Amino acid sequence: MTTSDAGLTRRQYLAATGAFLTMALSRTAGAAALEPIRQGYQTNMWGMPTYYLLKSGALEKRGVKFEEFAVPSGNLTMQQMVARQVDLGTYAGPSFILGNARGGIIAIAVIEKVGKTIRVMGRKDLGLTKIEDLRGKKVANQTGSSTGNIFVDQLAPKHGLKKGDYQEVRMNVNDMVSAMAAKTVDAMVCVEPYNAIAEADGIATTIVDFSTVDELPVFMAATPEFVEKHPETLVTYLRVWLDVAEDFKERPDKVADVVYTFYTSKGYKMSRDTFMKAIATVEVNPGFPNDLEPYMQRHAEILIQEKKITAIPDWNKVMRRDLIEKARAMG
Image 1 (tube, rainbow, N blue to C red):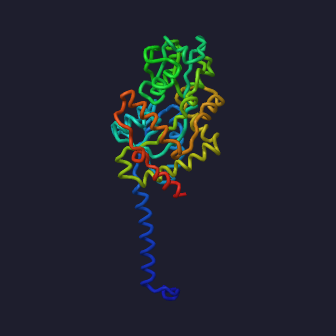
Image 2 (image 1 turned 180 degrees about the vertical axis):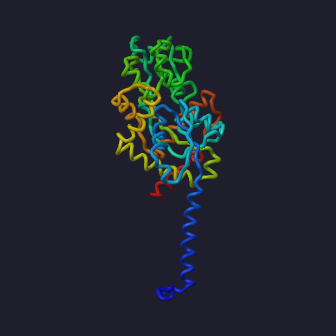
Image 3 (image 1 turned 60 degrees about the horizontal axis):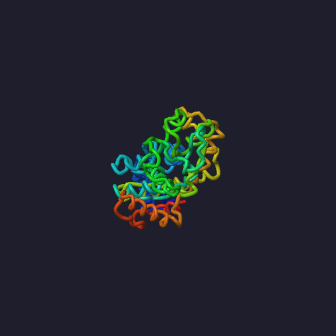
């Protein structure tokens, strides 16, 4: 049968075929336009939503390729981004403000709230029950991190402790439990799952968790060059975050399997029940909370008082709300 027999002239047939090829090539070009991402994340519990995102296969399904760069804490990811060694990374508000001041870093979403994941813990044998008990004690702290800054600048002063009233011991969070067990420090400002491990092993007891003073929203941040040159990649990337967030709400066991395997592969010994308690303290909900600007304004003012930054950021410029709104519209 000829094309004319089917009621379609040769010219119409070629035109239709050409249009189909154009659309196909356009879709291929669109997929190819997505830029590979250099993803930074911390190996404490704050970074585990990002770790799950990377291991879920959801990015590949949307055509997003990535390299991963893991570090002990978010302030190190921030430093990598300022040095332009990675494109994206997660950290809390104070570190984000510092990253913006030092390297123009842009927020593309708040991924999670983690105030419940941070605890001030004391060695069990010392019987410490309140912040005031830390006077004269050795306190392990991830100096320069958001949690470290909040403890030194807000939480300790709230309870009458200023710098010098306790001995701050600079330490990565993943080294704190062993230091507590060895009794080289008396207390720690630490994050999950290390808190849950210390508690389950009878090494430490909780003095306070940070949710009493700060819900600690954690930003996904990007370098300004990546935002400017590859907004379409970021929109697709955030669409994947919206998809993956459903797993945290509807399929927590699936998430737990992936993340629990990460920690056991690194040699950490904890029961699944202990781990489930730790991961339950992370609240994943990508977006920009309505009360975010007053919260960030307060942290920026504290950083100015501490002479760590010189000016308040323009929140409308440093928070790109439009990208996640476009991601929601993708469906």
